[in-house]
Amino acid sequence: MLNDNGIEAGIYAQAFRLLDAANMVSVLSAGLLLPMFARMLKYKESVESLVKVSYTMFMTLAIMVAAGCFFYGENMMRMLYTGDVAESTKVFQVLMCCFMGTATQYIFSTLLTANGNLKQLNIIAGCGMAINIGVNFIIIPRFHALGSACVSLSTQLFVAFVQILVMQKIFKFEMLFKLLATLAVFAIGVIGINYLSLKLPFDWRVSFILMCGASGIFAFAIGLLNVKGFLNVMKNG
Image 1 (cartoon, helix red, strand yellow):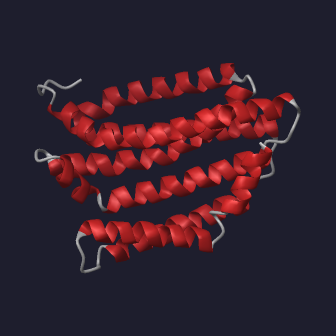
Image 2: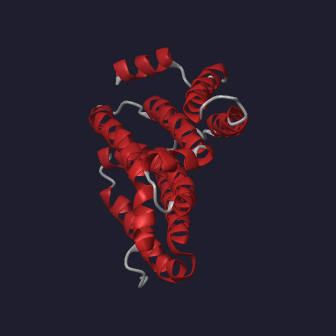
């Protein structure tokens, strides 16, 4: 789409590598959830508790990753690369927010797959692909790699939202207003923790580790991370 000898594609690739690595965690977890969902659905057991627990765990991690990479993006890019750091940092900060969308998709697409709703999943994926490619033809010539990253973020969140609607229509789970409100509070808190951690008089690596620890403690404090409940649900599943 650009006649620049692959410069913008290289910038995008630099920023995308860590997102690709983060998605591997979701892929492996989805592989564990698929047989559990399939068995529970086969025996007409409720999957609501497992869905809520797994989604809470995924989104807690996704929020921490997205916020941490946004605030520490430049440090990470400078640690990994020497060229085009300023440009790739902006792309990286946007792309890592996609992890919240992909984490959501891995939970609900796995559930829909186990339930045999492949037609709906293929339609959603096809629409997302068409939107992404179509908008990129308009955005990339003007906004280059950063524009493409913004399109990717929008597409991932759109696909995740549609999957949630389809899942809710099929399974009719109780609305997760309390969980979503708690996740919103957690996101605001993590943003504040990241901002304050940058003010610490330490090397950025030390500040980053402290930020991760503080975010984890905050997640436990507001009830997002319940290890006992998670182990019980996994055991029953």
